[in-house]
Length: 417
Length: 194
Image (cartoon, rainbow over all chains, first blue to last red; front, side):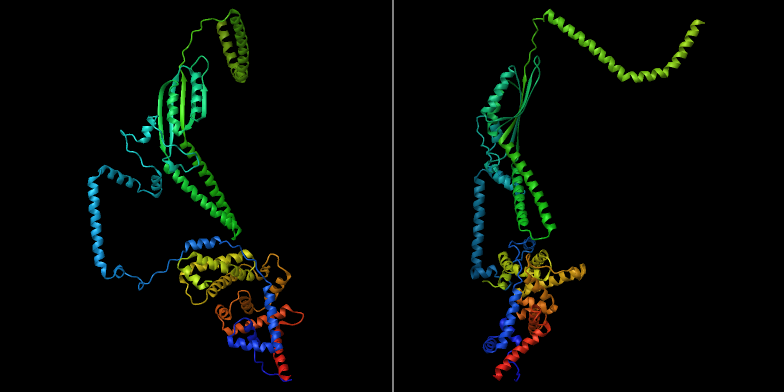
């Protein structure tokens, strides 16, 4: 048996299996493998090793993008590749040889626009233009103010120094824009104004006024926020109530309540909260987005336990803020939808003369009761005095007894002498 | 299918979807790379994230000199080396007990792990890069800073040694490689004699 040099090295067999040989080498190796049982055994061994190694499988992580990568993507946004100067074209190159013509045409068009604009300016109402410029200047503040301003409807021109709202408040017949229900985007319907009114009345028929007040409130779909009635029979009574009525019903309600008596005082107030409401809604939207992102992070948590706990703490904080802002938003919407009317009604009381005196037996009975009560009160007062001052009296008596006795003896002696 | 390199260039130009595709392609393999070499799946996942974060942060400097896969595993190997240095510094080697890479590790996996641990470190790394990361000899040579022929011979030695470790009752690891050569030569000689 002669041992000769093997034409195909075992490493080449391995490289053949790994696809690392050139096409010629692979063809030659394949041909050799077909007839060499020894090489077939080596290949079989190599395959077994690879198959054994493949049994070690690793569980793949979840498919969501981890927060660290999302953050890195946001922070390190790759800049778009710069165009090389050679690739840039100047505007002259773009326009070609006609660029002087185009430039002249552009200049002429600009001059025409300026002239046309000036003619229109002179021919139109300068006040309107100035007012538009003024409103633009007002709106040129922060983005939030611009957003709030864009949500307001165009205001009517002032009438006798009063704007539409003031005019409507003083004129019950003029209908105001209807407020939407709480929870809706009210800013889309117009400015958000919290209206409050104070009304003080005096009436001779207190009971009737109170009953009518409730009827008026029911008719205008309002409700009582708080109600207090004070005073006793024989003296003037008073009613203090905080009423909530739909904002568009406030004027009609006020007019009817005024018929219940004589008006002592009246005041109205309107607070524009449009910008606060828009601001609150924006913050609420942001907070909800943050909550959503944090929830996603928590759902796809892949980091350390401390990171997860940190995310949960942040989520709790954001949820607390959302609840607080939601409550604030609802309160504001409710205040806008329902005006507050603080009504005070006082009774115009006249003291009446007691014409019929009480009977003798009643007077005797009352006197007996008063005497008995007086006696008991005296005994109780004495007992109370002794209990509260007795120890002090005893102490001072003991201290002053001997000096008083000496003085008393001297006085007696002097009288005896 | 768009190549990795084209996607990376797209991402360099500002395309996030391109990165998402790369992330989807390599998240699992990279996690496996770290998980098979380290204890603890959370740390493996952290290092996977760190690798991608490094890719994002260095994206402006990326140049298409080599395959994206090689570039990616180059970063991963640097992170792995740093992690190993940190582990060696923080805790004695006795405490770094091996932990199965799967939650319900079958005996065969433990058997494979134990056999791999018996290999020389360099040979084991080459073998794992080939078998699990499916890198070519040239890529492994680039990552390990070795000639391709050295990679090939070490890979063969590692495979034969592993075969011996997986069949301890029949062969010893030292003789497995020489035995394979002898078998091949003997069979061929017998063939010539016949």
